[in-house]
Image (cartoon, rainbow, N blue to C red; front, side):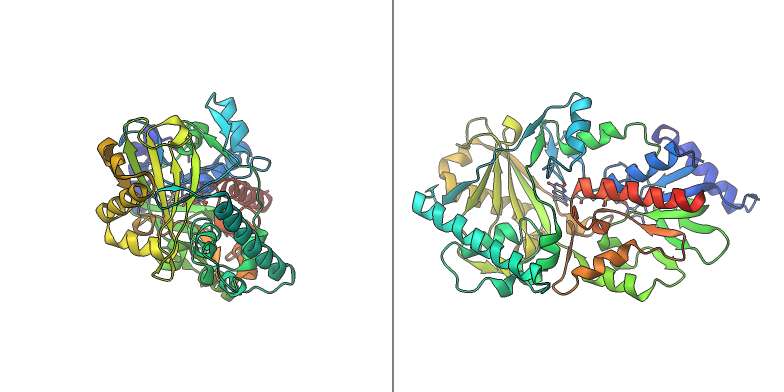
Length: 442
Ligand SMILES: Cc1cc2nc3c(=O)[nH]c(=O)nc-3n(C[C@H](O)[C@H](O)[C@H](O)COP(=O)(O)OP(=O)(O)OC[C@H]3O[C@@H](n4cnc5c(N)ncnc54)[C@H](O)[C@@H]3O)c2cc1C
């Protein structure tokens, strides 16, 4: 049985009533249940339907997209709450998908702007910053090639005035974790390439691409039981039975134990759930009158960080004048970002505004309109930003692709070995899991 969002209320009630009264005699309600309607779950659902299977994709939230969602209401212009960069154009199918949807897709500026308090960095500063980032990158790559799954922090060595900024951009702002928690092997395994943007927002793109994918919203899986003939999924709306289940929830949800799984998960998979953990990364979005922030559209700004707090560099990175709009993101991640997230949205906005004021001057406050901040670590459906391996644990990522009882399959950004932590990776993993299930069902 599949349901569209439009028929959600009726369909969900029907399912609950059938099962709740025990009147169903069917062995299964559908061939496959897909849990989660983020990039992975949506891709799985489409692929399974295309292959002639009956599917029910259930989503706890009242919208699709998961960590890819564009809010157009708060500021009246698109603001991506989660993913914004279309990473690695050559591997990323969403650039062409977006173009076919007539959305505005364009390449991100290739040059990063470097600043220190109140001004642009001098040429000498820039050289020092980029050399330091390259030096750390080279050290991490060397260790990874030697198959030493060390922490990135152990590679840094003697520091210079730009080491902390370089660490922030390699660690907290890319991997969503401080260098001490970055596995060099995991970092090295991720493909890199040219980034693109979608002016209408990545969330808009994903939602448009999946406008016809049937999803049952507001339906939270509480348990999955594959210890009987069919796989039984208990939800807040009733019970469903299927031949197989694809689980696309985040590592945060898996580790939280909020989704009970039977039979007991294999030790190797449990190790991987413990070793591939969620990092912290958030957007503090600030809106200004046009022309307030003196930066080219989509400027990605590294500014010199000089202090540590809560285990990581204190500060973030800035994406200014996004897609020619009047929005700027102050990006925060890692230990510092997590502690800021814990203090609440108002503190995050104050922090973001203070950082921009320190760089562009107090006059920008006259053009300030309003702000908002995401808090993905507090989002009960995700519990963090995206996955990364702890040092020494990178090899466990592969165990996430093992099945549970031959009928429960995990898929999502975390099960990707080369595009982990990305939308493209999640999408491809959704397709991979669907293919596995199609082979199983014949
Ligand atoms: C702030 C931020 C910035 C990012 N920036 C980028 C970027 O620029 N580029 C990029 O490529 N990637 C970025 N990412 C990562 C990217 O968003 C993710 O890798 C990707 O969206 C994950 O997709 P997924 O399908 O694996 O998981 P999700 O999107 O988490 O989908 C899982 C779904 O399962 C649902 N769910 C959870 N529990 C249950 C349950 N019990 N029952 C039913 N449903 C449930 C959730 O609500 C969710 O919709 C960013 C992420 C964040 C948070």
